[in-house]
Amino acid sequence: MFGYIFLGIGFGILLQEAGYNVLWALFGSLFIYAGSIQYLMIPLLVTGAPILTVAVMTLLINSRHIFYGIGFIDQFRGMGRKYPYMVLALTDETYVLLSTCKYPPEVDRDKAAFYISLFNHGWWIFGSVLGVLIGTLIPFDMTGIDFCMTALFVVLLTNHIKQTKKLIPVVIGIISALLFLLLLGPANFILPSLCLTVVLLALFKNRIDLRKEGAVS
Image (cartoon, rainbow, N blue to C red; front, top):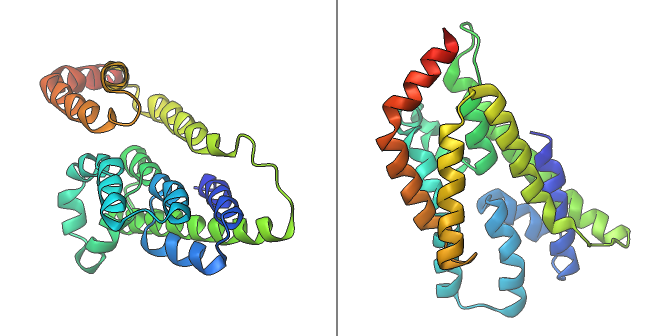
């Protein structure tokens, strides 16, 4: 969860470098709350991109969240008034945490999921605002800062493998991503690779479940 602070700081510093103040960081992180599109938002703002371009880019980049929500529809609907916020707060990192958390029997699962999402959001907002302030006060070398998001994803994937002991979904995801990356390039591979991944996971669902049961026994 603390990783969001450092990601937010990176976003805030980049935003300040582009000439935007702390209010942009605060409200951007409060209402947009999607790390990858917020990073992309900076050049779109600087270049004055048309609203249609922004909408299409946002849809394409965040289309993966459609797949994230499938596994949580029933749980989120059962959370009443928190349902819309849980949909907004289902980011990459929060999805991994909610998917891999092992709740003790005495813990309210819905309440724990809500606080995980809320704290992640809070860390991101805090980091974004702090990043603008740091960028304002301290000259900063930006070299390599755009790699922090990739580094976090690698850490999350490693933890996910350690906790679930499932390699088949990881292998399917890697093969699908590489296949469409080679065929369509880095700008267009995410959505088709996710579609193929979902289809393959559905086909291999029984095999994955059996391997899980075998690991438990």
